[in-house]
Length: 253
Picture (cartoon, rainbow, N blue to C red):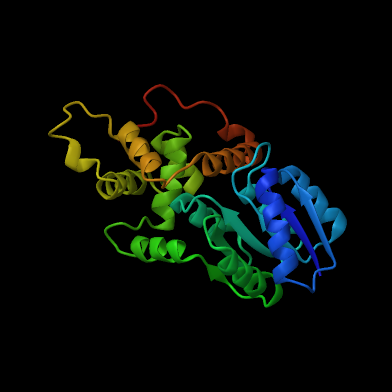
């Protein structure tokens, strides 16, 4: 069994390699690389069955790297290993994991014994396993008053990328009225509507983004991924649709 470790911190990488040696005597090779781009290249060249992936890295984050690896080899087992339990990361992983693939998410604060258990469960036995804190976050987000639907979250990402309502509607395949209804729901779920009396003249779009970032519903890595997806969408958009809208052609809530 061959394992690829994608981790930009040398201390964490050395610790992880030591735990892998203890937990998985079946491993014949462990390779360490320092960022997502190197991880993609190594996975492609070395045909690793399993990967342990950090999420915050320079040049290419873990979500983007995992998406490329799974696109090329969907049976690869990937364990995400991070300091953070952001909702944005959970959504990012859920959006890219292939059907029936083994994967996991464990925090770097997990005990050595817990990490060994998760390594064996995900990388060797092919289970899906989440850290306890991640499970608590998932249960919280399942409550209707907290949870953003996939459609609402997609609109939130487009809002963060600076798109006006008409372009969001085109990109998401929605009517303009539906986009505006999604925005109203976002303002409610993110707690923006309750602030209007205390903050007269509140810009709801900007405030919604502020709330999403402060609650870790959005983070830098997910915005990087969303920007990449937007660039691909714009490049594939028919030429006659790329002209800027006429003045007054796109209202915004």
